[in-house]
Structure formats: structure tokens, C-alpha cells
Length: 126
Image 1 (tube, rainbow, N blue to C red):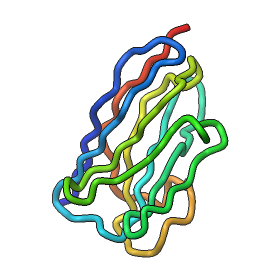
Image 2 (image 1 turned 180 degrees about the vertical axis):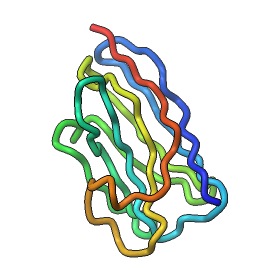
Image 3 (image 1 turned 60 degrees about the horizontal axis):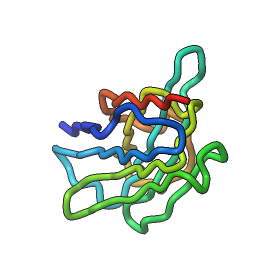
């Protein structure tokens, strides 16, 4: 059974940085789409970054482009989300998700992703 475990969340001030980590166990995701979503109170779930592990190709939501960087460490079976220049509106629970099917990396529709982590909280204060 594939399990995703996020870590690295915390509280920072505006302009600060955090790096989230998503460790995958139970499978090696060599050619899969992995994404980071976030959910803030009163808002809809938002896909913020995704990576196709076979090629390292990345995609970002406009709200985080230029500030967040998603990467993978295939040796550690881990996906990272480096978050810089954090803003209060980045405050949310962040979830790692994986599409276990091998079919490319096509979007932020949450229905594509069939494995999810438990989430890690990111709080940005002004």
C-alpha cells in the first residue's frame, strides 16, 4: 500500500521560507504525477505545484509561480516543495498527492490523484 507522509510545515513570518517534504513508501514512483495541494479555511482546495517524476517537468499555479519550487529526489523517493517569499494568504494545510497510474501529469483536478498524505500545516503571519 502506498503511503505519503508530509513534513516540514510550521509558522513563519511574511517573507519567510519553508520546505515541505513528502516521503513515499510502498512503491517507487518513477513515472508518476505528484502534486501539492493546499486547503485554507473557507476556501476551495487549490493545486499549487506538480511534478512528473519521470522527467522532472514541473507546473505551478499562478498564485505561487516564482515563489515555490517543486522537486523530487528519486533516490529518497521524496518530493519537496520549497516555499519562498511566503505571504499570509499562503496559510493553509498542505497535502501531497500522487497519481499512481502511469499516464503523464495533466492537471490539478484532485480526482486524478489517488494517494494522499495527511497534510502539514503552514501558517504565515504578517
